[in-house]
Length: 179
Picture (cartoon, rainbow, N blue to C red):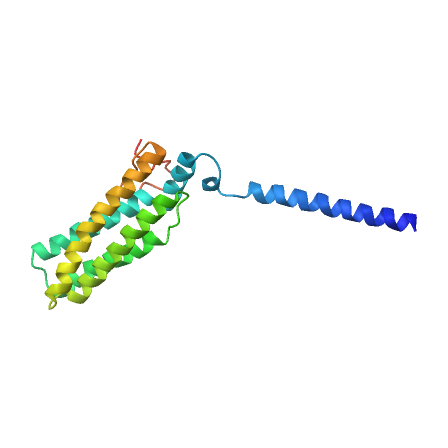
């Protein structure tokens, strides 16, 4: 009986050792954005999610919608730039959440407003002046919301990310904060 108890205790000890080692390994697998200071976590997220260029893309999309209207482009072309705005807003929203809850909320609100602006513009192009007016107000609001999100990134990290939409060459080590 004594040897079976010792064998069972050894088995329990080995199991506990394996479980302890597994938990250490799993902690080591956590992404960089899940460890460190809030500044480090958000900086890593900005770089990994391409947050600056995502924000910049929405800003460019809004300018393109405004340009299409100012040039009195045909409704089909207006629908194209409006659809792109809605699509890019959805892509940006897909990069959420961030490691910072306040930033996540600000970006989520901005992306949702941009999406609404794009869909209202798309639906209103050509015939619905009420939807087009709503879209114009949403585009203005989106710009303000994106500025608030950029300010939050700067407050947390100490740097404002570059919002350029130009892609860096493959293999380059480009700082997402433009430093």
